[in-house]
Length: 415
Ligand SMILES: Cc1ncc(COP(=O)(O)O)c(C=O)c1O
Image (tube, rainbow, N blue to C red; front, side, top):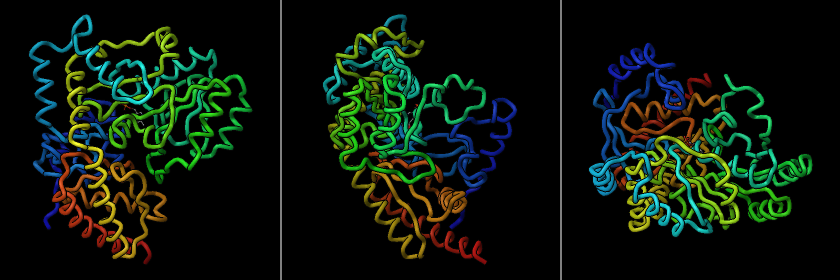
C-alpha cells in the first residue's frame, strides 16, 4: 500500500511557525502527534472522513477532539445554523434561541434546573469553581491527578507563565481513592468549596478508569456532610454515554455539570447546568464573553441534541466502538503484542504494554495515519455517528498492517 506524504502540510507548518507562536499551539501541534507521520492542516471533511491539505483522505477517530459526534458537515445541523445565519448570529442582546436552548437542556439533563452558556469547556469549568467558592464561602477545589479540565490558569497542565498563587487553592487526589479524598477533606476541613470529576477518568497517556462500585455514593455523602459542591466535568463524555448526562450512567448526583464539545457538533458553545439551590450563587458570580450569546451555535446545539436522541446515536457509537475494540484486541493478540485498550467503547484509549515513552504507540498511530486512519497516540479516540461498519472494517485492515509493522519494530528494539 502506498503511504501518504505531507509536503504541503509541513511547508505550511514552516510558514505558520514564522507567523504564530509554535506554528500550531496546544494539543493540535504536530509535536503532540507523531512528527512527520501526520498532516498538520486539514482542508475539508464529510461525515467520518477528513482530507488534509495534500489531498490525503482519512477515517477520522479524533472528531476534532470530540466535537463532531455526528460527523463533519451534518446536513441537518448545518441547515439549522444557516437558517439562523440568515437572521443574524451575534447581537447586542441574546436572541430567541436563548430560552429555547435553555428550556431544551433543562428538560433533557437529569437533575438540573438552570443553564448558562459559554464558548469553550474551560469557560464553564472555571465558572463552576467560582460558583462553588461563592456558594460555600470556601476556597479549595479538589481535582483528580492527571485530569484535564481546561486551559485556564487555575488548572492549566503547563505552569509556564502562571504565578503559583493561581493554583494555590487546587488540591488533587488519585482517581477512585476515596481514602485519599477523605484525607484531603480532613486536612483542609471547612475550607473545601468543590470537587470536580469527569464521569469516569480519561487522562491523556494513561489507562482510562471507570468509577469503582460505591465510589460516587461515598463521595457524595462526604460532600453533603462537609458542604462541598460536586461538579461534574462532562465536557468530553457528554452526549456519548447517556442522553440525559453521563452521571445517569453511573447513578451519580452532581450539583453542577459542565458540557461542551459534542453538544453542537463542532459549533462553538459550552454550557454549565446546576440545581436551583445554587442559582443565587451563580447569579452572584460575573460571567460573560462577547461571543457567549451568539445564536448560530445555539441553533446548532438544539438540532444536534435532538438528533442524538432521535437517531439513538449513543447506542450506535457504542456498538461501533465494540466492533473496533474487538477487532483491535484480536489483532494485537495475533501478533503477540500486549495492549491496553481502556475506557468507554465510544471514547477508547489504546497503548502498548511497557511502552512507557509511548514511542511504539507513536509508531503504530503514525503508520496508521500514513495509511488513512487518524488515531491519536496520546489521547483517547472518538467514535462518531457518521462512522460506518465499512469504516471500521477498512480501519481494521490498516491496523492489522500496523500491528505487523509494530511487531517488527519491537523485535528491532529487542535486538
Ligand atoms: C474533560 C474536559 N474538560 C474540559 C475541557 C476543556 O474544554 P475546552 O478545550 O473546550 O476549553 C476538555 C477539553 O479537552 C476536556 O476534555
